[in-house]
Figure (cartoon, helix red, strand yellow):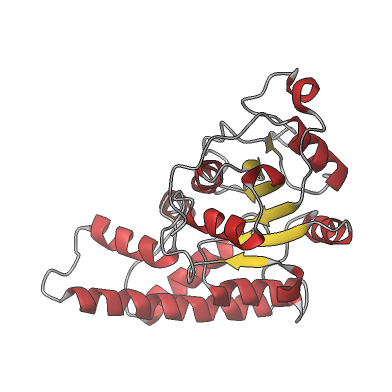
Length: 270
């Protein structure tokens, strides 16, 4: 049996009795990498191929990449790693560094996109069923991620079909939200686009950065970790689950209705 039980963190056994039925769930907001799909191993392999193509001796093993996931955003991880190595080039301009990082990241994205189209990545257990169940019940779906639009399209076009974008009422990504998680910018943008208060929505995440971002936007959050994020601190989440394989929309509605009030937003949306 998985070490992750259907655990409610930060709630007492009587929470359901106190708040059940007080709110109606109207929207589900999903992170992408690690949440909709367990993509991180494929991302790591793509980074390593891009480093090799650039003529670099860099190699991110699983332990290194796990640590780097504390940094949101692929380009941000490259820059952080470069600085940490101690051989950061002081003799080229800031634009030269940015150009190099962008070139590496573009190569990595191309490798990742090819891998996804080749079937290397699929949606996590229960995700597609839950998306369809929620859509059929009239709930709105949204995406709140720090990944690039190209990565999202590659994954969901393959997993859902060419009309995948029409399944979502709102999509926030690295192109719309430059402030990376744990900043709540992308979640605040999605709430604005949905024209819904945080109390009418649930967020789905796999990492502590994602949880902090969603919570700062006032969203109750369901966590489904991967092996890369299993050691993260998930205190404050609504539920901690191994995956969504057995989760029903009715359960989500019950959990949502039983939650205590969420904190006020601490950051502006823009």
